[in-house]
Each structure stands twice: as structure tokens, then as C-alpha cells.
Image (cartoon, rainbow, N blue to C red):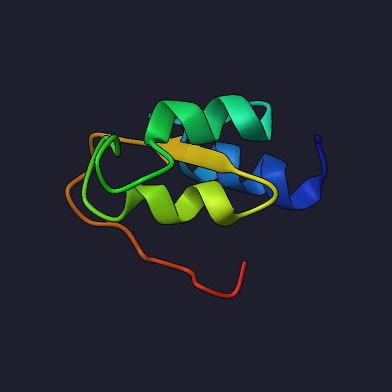
Length: 67
């Protein structure tokens, strides 16, 4: 999944990590219900077909909801 947009994201966030994984494994790691979710509302991500995570230590970042 290496395209121009992804390369730009990786370059802009070079101090962070982009994590890709199988949907079911990512959903299980984040939690599929409110009882077993890692953080509040993370279980909602298990309903999304394709999941990728951007992990960072930055304090602020822009959230883009149209992706």
C-alpha cells in the first residue's frame, strides 16, 4: 500500500509510525466491545473494514475525518 499520499504522510510524520495489519487482528488488539476496548471508544474501530494506525508522541495533530 505504498502510494504518493502514503509516502507524503510518512515523510510529514517521520518521527511516528504507521501500522497496518489484518483487520480482525487490529480489531481484536483495540477491542471489539466496550468491556475489552483498549481506550474509550476504540471498539468503534472494529466496525471499520480497513484499519491503519498512526502512533506518535506529538501532543497535537490535525484530525482528518474524510479519510
